[in-house]
Image (cartoon, rainbow, N blue to C red; front, side, top):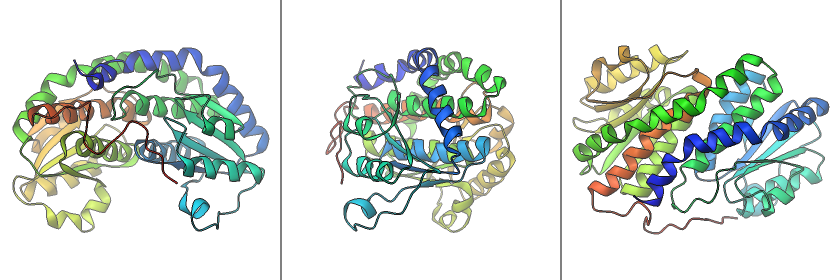
Amino acid sequence: MSWTSSEIREQPLVLERILRENPAQAKECARQIKDRGVRYVLIAARGTSDHAAVYAKYLLGSKLRLPVALAAPSLYTFYGTPPLTGPDALVVGLSQSGASEDVIAVVRHARSQGALTLAITNEPTSELANAASLVLPCLAGPERGVAATKTYTAELACVALLCASVAQESGLFAELAALPEAMDQALQTEQAAAQVAAQYCRALLAVCLGRGYNLATAYEIALKIKELAYIHAQGYSTADFMHGPLACVEPGLPVIAVAMSGALRDDVAASLSRVGQRGGQLIIIYDDEAILQSAHASLPVPKVPEWLSPITAVVPGQWLAVHLALAKGLDPDRPRALTKVTVTR
């Protein structure tokens, strides 16, 4: 078994560890957020962590009603014109390694201006962690696979735990507690993902669609397919896709869609119907069979509350990326041109 496959399988245990060991840190973060009267959030991230930031944008906006923006790190490192932040801001650095210089620069500058700063990282002694005033560790353990899998869902779980700690709603904690079991069920999609991979491994292009909380999932699945299988997969919001890219759909194009129950299910279903009418080959990750009317292939996951669904819905996409690589005779542990830690500035 590859390192990447092994680490995908570790995800239920990582979630259990976060929910067992991180509540005290999350509670302290929540206390300081409330004491500071935080009014908006700025998040700095790169790569896979950028997709965790997209999830945070939806989650903190919907549950805490906080405006969330994603930082432009080059304003800090190249242009020398960093935006002004103050004591009513929470600035978050999201990075598995904690080593990306541009993410560190955003956090360090914000702290110097009096903003509350938080590092969510798998390396709690990293430079990013040292730059921030607060740290929420991912607790994923060493990740040997170049493509981030367990560290990605760990970041999502840390964001979800932080959100629940600020909101202080008992129902949110109960829903979080059920997540490891749901993740274990989501892992059972491997065989179905391998069958889909065998069918589509010769594709050169693919599209990944999602919306709302699961826009992050579409982006992350597309990235994993690019990294491991060298298929140019592009992630889109279904709403944005209807505004132009729909014209690129031709018969046979693989379209991987994340269609979870919740506020956007019917809207996503309507968009997928239009994709199907143009001949797109729909591969649907779903938790309710009612959405499968136009599917060419399907990957089921257990139903969880919509705000947590990105944590489980990404798993079939992780398996799909691994098995696309294997079907093409590639090593998913050694993707070309990539290293485990990418440092940008």
